[in-house]
Image 1 (cartoon, rainbow, N blue to C red):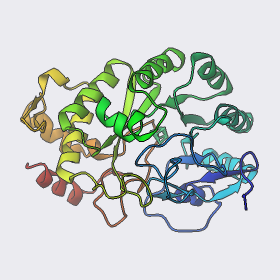
Image 2 (tube, rainbow, N blue to C red):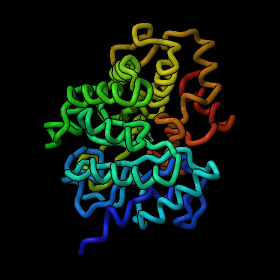
Image 3 (tube, rainbow, N blue to C red):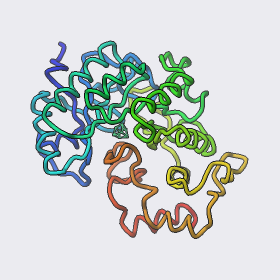
Image 4 (cartoon, helix red, strand yellow):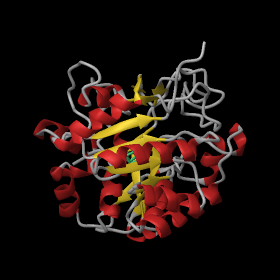
Amino acid sequence: MSETCFPERLRVSTGSAIVLGLLKGRLDAKPTTAYLLMCRNEKCSANCGFCPQAKDSKGRADRLSRVTWPTFSTEKVVTGIQSASKTGTIKRVCIQSLNYPEAFDDVLFLVTQIKSRIAVSISVSCKPLNKQKMEKWAEAGVNRVSIALDAATEDVFNDVKGRNIGGPYQWEKQHEALKEATDVFGKGSVSTHLIVGLGETEQELCQSIQWCIDSGVYPGLFAFTPISGTALESKSSPNLSSYRRVQLAHYLLTQRKTRLENMGFNDEGHIIEFGVSKEKVLEAIESGKPFLTSGCPGCNRPYYNERPSGPIYNYPRQMRQKEIEETKKVLGF
Ligand code: SF4
């Protein structure tokens, strides 16, 4: 039996639903962004190997990454966003639009509803769209878009979301769409997602991060998370020390403290030089900032990639001193 879905109902991540007052529960770390997922009775038209929403996935439709997304009435969700943004509990709304024929219009409708009542920043994570469509979203009040590269290299991309897995996405087009999005939203107001642990090397990730920076796109880092029912369900999460090195490189690159050409890699593509002094590397580690969730401003995605029991790949809050000390050890400092 099909469920009532959008426009009447929307999916909301469980953590966001608690913050919006739609569910009762305790949270170790509260999301600072309200994460919404379009509610449909069919799966996504794309087929990303890591995603439970993919058309061939046998994963649960109420899942995206590790997170569950129950449905609520759209009216209640918008009212919850109104109160939570008034008190400053949420700083942004993120709409995960999925890939389906009416996605553009559905997002436009939802953004218009939210913006008619609330002055809140809105990000939309979407498939590549043409400029006219992006302009329409921008006029309606979308502040940022995120078009996911997910993979750091063309080969990995083709295997996990492109032609080799029966997906509609093309490496070149995804890059072109990101550049076009910066023409509409401005450099620095477009994001992408990069998943660590899909088979690429650390060097390839750094190359992709540098491409993003040079193109005015901010890359958010994700740790690959195996989800049952997906094509990649039996693949492992990335090694923690490798993830920490990439986070550190991502921080130094995005803060423009280093560049790819100043960095060093060994034969396996592991980072062996960050291109700044050891003191500066240590200073960065001790600030804890490289290991916080990266993405749009105000996005902390608690426990998106990790079990609360750890290891915590992306910290949704300031790190504790003990966690910084552990991270130093993991990085060999
Ligand atoms: S970085 Fe965060 S807010 Fe931005 S699109 Fe990704 S999940 Fe949404």
